[in-house]
Image (tube, rainbow, N blue to C red; front, side, top):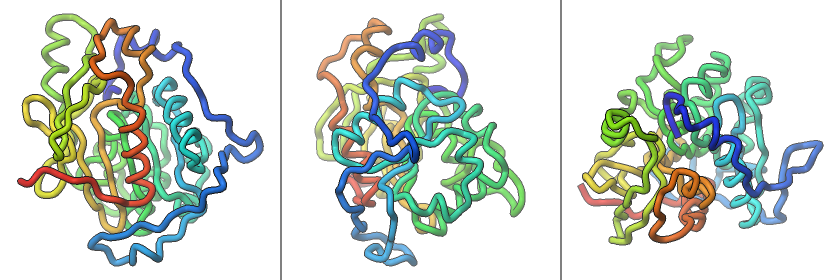
Length: 287
């Protein structure tokens, strides 16, 4: 969703959605499907040695978009993936070893400044180490993409913004943010994404960024050619960043009065989630 808050978000947060049903004691949905090892990558940790016990951690803490959290949980459950829902308090209580038990860390849309701003300094450092050193994947949608990218801080310091999973400049908004704000309308739109294999999908954009591009990174492009979905390695960890919201249900799109040309994108959301869990790289545009 947004790096900053949207006036309309209060209404959207109240919309109902399907939800996964976690175990009430552990907050873990079990599938009976064994966690897979990933396959290839230019890393120091051999891909077949990556050992995790739960497919994914789904962050549902402060600043997250509850509608997307519930939809992501439903997608994971329907595909038989094991996951644990974690709020801010629980995340702050986690040690690095706790984070390393997951195949992927999922950070949904919402308000990025709030998501990262309520994490402790140690938690931010642990998240970065979980990805870069332990080889845990990170997948971020909109705000979850925003907070992933910032210059790496000096040792013992917090990043200038977010968590800095990926070293680079803090992301800029897609140009629609300024244009829609100037018109005084809700900063949401269906945006056509073009994928490296030539397929096209209309995906909900809700104040999202331009994600990092560059060689062997861009999975999908906005209509103007900017990167909308990309993948990259950060140390030992695999990272997927999506500016838009393929997990957004039709109820959200309808609430914005947006015309949807091709239905829900839950299949794409799952492909991205599965790729992050198993570290399977997507086809990308040649630079």
